[in-house]
Image (cartoon, rainbow, N blue to C red):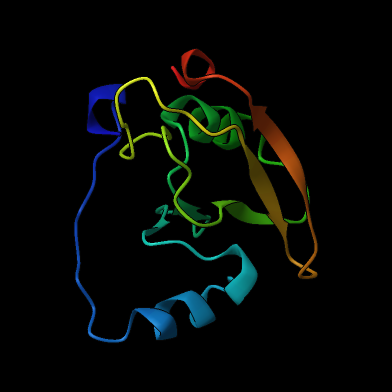
Length: 111
């Protein structure tokens, strides 16, 4: 993320589930990392930086953020050589629903 111009502060809370609950990230959309933008958007999991940039430019109505549930093989930070599992980036909505915001079908689509 920092290589794409994002500044980050890393925190290791003792109760990460409390953080996820505070930002209304339902268990089925959770992953290992939770980021919160200065404007309060949440980014859960291994989301490609270019997708975060697109989201912050578009600011979809009624969105609270994005999520990549689990830890898909080959996603940013989960690289394993040439191995890759396609995955969806989900748009998290204020009403608790989601929709597919982006489909990542190949590793090259992430960058």
